[in-house]
Length: 419
Image (cartoon, rainbow, N blue to C red):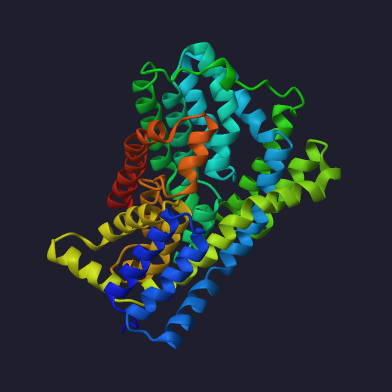
């Protein structure tokens, strides 16, 4: 029934976590963890390696789509479109609604296909400038950006969404729309929690040295949003008109449109190379993730977790958000956590009667709860974007978890109401 023991799979995952904390590359950490976990789990060398290869192979369709998404991400960043979208939203909403504007801007940029850490880094200079004028603390600004990014991430064509859709064999657009309400609830939670921190400066007010001069060479708002709009329209053709445009096509087309309307098409090579550089890391991470996901999927872990839920008299659907939370926390990555949880428990959840789309949505939302722990890159990249120390950055983790938990609970409620 299974090739590896639960103990072996868990020890392999623990080893991977320890290696990641020791700053070993996450992909290598996950590969080594998969190998050791398979051997300890009683699979033998041949079975373990074959399972790892099979798990990595299952990631290839996701990796291809993620690599092509780099065209859109690169275009939005290098043409200044992402920054223009953020600036316009913040300018229109004004200082009185500064935190809401910062959160909304980050949500939208992430929702149209920019990775969540890049979304935060993109909005950070604008947020710091307005925070300086409005007297807002760095913590409130960063929480607003991270919360907005989490909200946008679960409704975006980003790597975690693509990997989850692939694992459950559901339409990407449908999965994006499934968590629209949870995303909006997470946005509201982020704004509320950020507001509680707005005046708690404690020496963390935005300094003059934190504010960067604005870039006057940005495109107009309409050219800036046209590329993402094309992607949204193309992806929406399937549920609206029954015409399937794969993200493999829609995402790079949106990037090309963005370059064309902003007058940067002559820089096609440079922009696409930049975009590729932004997705290579997550693509390699997914391959490593696939190896340990394969071992975990072929272990007794999923059966033991179901047995535990039954012993505790908990319904089977609880496995979906719980798996997303635990795996994302273990890997400190939304993408890796959502992928491992989806790859491991998709068949079990569907067999238990949970609809694939709802199960994928709950796992995906759950993966945003504790995905920003210090052994992951997101923690450090976002803290650095507003010049926060590690100590001060860690104080935000409980607030970030609350935002992710708001999304997760609302996703569960959506399942309970609508199935």
